[in-house]
Length: 368
Ligand SMILES: Cc1cc2nc3c(=O)[nH]c(=O)nc-3n(C[C@H](O)[C@H](O)[C@H](O)COP(=O)(O)O)c2cc1C
Image (cartoon, rainbow, N blue to C red; front, side, top):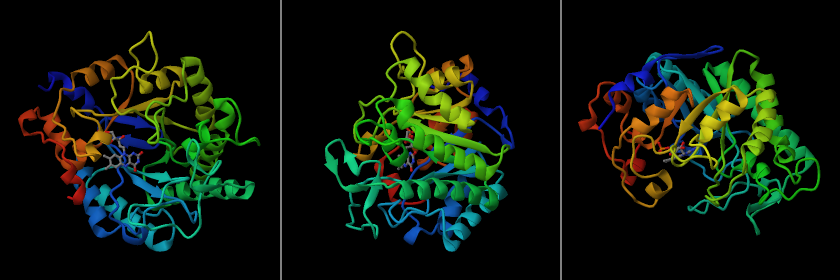
């Protein structure tokens, strides 16, 4: 079932100060095991168990210092002495196991309240207060809110570097704050933060990238995660043509992105008609930057269905390897397969396909 040439995924990767032992990235996955936003020793052990084999771990989304950056009290903070001390424990454990790690810094933007009923102390904030086109559950951010949020992203990135992380990832995908600015359906602003075109609506993302770059210096790798799809609507496409995509990504690359992390639910789906290139393939072709692909690598079903209880079975890596060997992307992020099995990369490298596990929703219940 597993192709013979998986070894190509086990070549080292190096960019600026970032040195990775292989091309496999643990995808960012929210686990909600950090009470009051503080990562516990269990969280450090969870990442530590995966650090020996994964090239780069991207942490679960960890929220920046804004009163309504999160809708979940168990999602980790990336600010405040106690939370940052928890993260120091995480990165030390990852380094002790020979791994590399980037925190994924995050602001959720306008959300619906958490299932538990927990709410932040102030209303959710976003470009226009909308969580869905036509549904308002938050407030429109003022100029001062925007400036403070951009600065908070920069501070978090500076803290990542100071704590010893190897890179930083900005969460600009999946319909959260940065993506809410990008998406015309949620960004109805008529000031300089909105506009009819994607480049106009990218101004917030560009400013966040600039603030992050300024905080970490030139040699520290900055990753930006983007998606066309939104959790609110899988069918949305920000860029409908390669020209749209170039106009979207070029200013972000110029602002300081080193690696685009191109989130798809299924990596093999072509982005535009007339070519089989996926999002990561196009982003690399259009910007010349390194890219990460992601989405159902090694599994039969995609992750949103998994939340609803659908099990996924191990599947062939042949199509992934075909694209990788063609040079479409530099790194491959794997989510659920590594969540349920810290040994996944080793099993792939050693062609032990018979020992690969299914992914079932039960894996989300513990931090094993
Ligand atoms: C439990 C879970 C939590 C997730 N949380 C995040 C997150 O915090 N940030 C993010 O960018 N993506 C998140 N994702 C999406 C994953 O990073 C990844 O893109 C997705 O699971 C597809 O990869 P997979 O098919 O290999 O699981 C999450 C996925 C899962 C399964």
